[in-house]
Amino acid sequence: MAETIQASYPVDDRNRVRRRHDRGAYDHATVHALLDAAVLCHVSYVIDGLPYCTPTLFWREGTTLYWHGSSASRMLRNQSEGQPACLSVTHLDSLVLARCGFNHSADYRSVMAFGNARLVDDPAAKAAALVAMVDRFFPARTAGLRQSSAQEIKATAVVAMEIERASAKIRAKGVGDDEEDYLLPIYAERLPVRMVIGTPEPCPRLLAGVTRPETLAGYRAGRLLEEAVAEAHAVTYPR
Amino acid sequence: MAETIQASYPVDDRNRVRRRHDRGAYDHATVHALLDAAVLCHVSYVIDGLPYCTPTLFWREGTTLYWHGSSASRMLRNQSEGQPACLSVTHLDSLVLARCGFNHSADYRSVMAFGNARLVDDPAAKAAALVAMVDRFFPARTAGLRQSSAQEIKATAVVAMEIERASAKIRAKGVGDDEEDYLLPIYAERLPVRMVIGTPEPCPRLLAGVTRPETLAGYRAGRLLEEAVAEAHAVTYPR
Image (cartoon, rainbow over all chains, first blue to last red; front, side, top):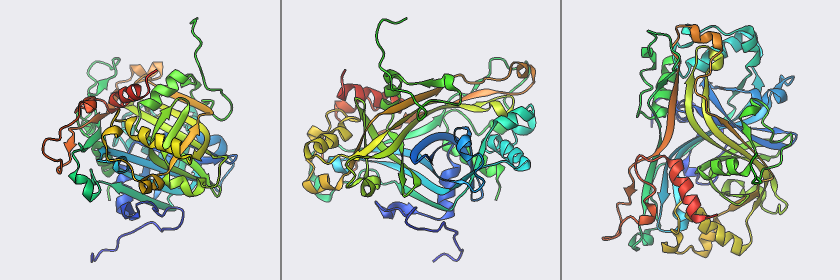
């Protein structure tokens, strides 16, 4: 129906949403929006045939994902061709209490992204990534910071992964009971949950006269973290 | 110093916290408390040599973890010996804005647990797990629900994993700059974030006179989700 062409990730056995496939999406817009609203991901690798699942901060630039990769750097070093990885992001939106155990559920928005993780070794690319690692969350912040030392740059491992396959899975329906169960005198509810920003805590050792920059105004107490994070991404990576 | 013996998970190359090892812990008390305060985990498996990282609801019973395992059930069926898995839980507590890029960080509390995942097939064990899957979060709730049908029980895959190795990793220090950087006129802060419960949304189709049971009182608007979840666990699994 739409006249615009919507870019999507290819679908195969690896990323096809099987269970509740009606909840799946593969288009760039849906997948990227969920990634860009997140701070934290979990990345899985295989090391010596065994799975590892590591939490880390990450960000997206086009169809490439970047993350802080110290835990994987031993594995990735000397592997210029990369190592298969799966990066997942989940926004939990509610717990759902239904009228039977089977229909208890949760509302959520999640992404699984697949590709080959590789260490960012090229000096210029790594320097750019270390700026983006901060500025993606706090636009233009790096320009006002003490510059990174060569030792710090060396000590920071950045991993990049071109997204080869990805899927989004979204449940947003609240209570969904079997039709006949609505006749039962059982309490059911959707219990919303949300990740919110608290009151910023300035460093107690700030020099006199140093105040919170206006660029951080989006990170205000009570706001949804995902809103501020998505907004920052749009500032740092304008379309 | 303490006269009590503190149970811990064994440590080897698989679960030893390498980077910032001072943030690591292996004792049951620390690991279990972080698990019991969570609703959501990410589980990694290896399928055909490739890693998968799947979000799911989970819970702990002693040193066994359980989760809803439909996405893994194809892989796990007919594998009575189990399949290596890594289950991770992360509580994000803050974003940390430092005076240089390198010291930007986050406060968090995370667990990685390793073991062999297996399908819960025994009918009695599975029936018990399906009760716990609800009651662990909402104590005693199952007793008041419409009973599960044989078809529902069959359609629900439950995975169990005895924790063989586990580690907790905690950062809780806020801004931590290099000593000389505190002399710079740069703004730095700890930006706390937290997962809170919203206003419960009763199902619009509740029968007249059906009210929210007192057992759900812990899940009240504005409370930290992890507090309510940990409290519920303690009720369902008293020491």
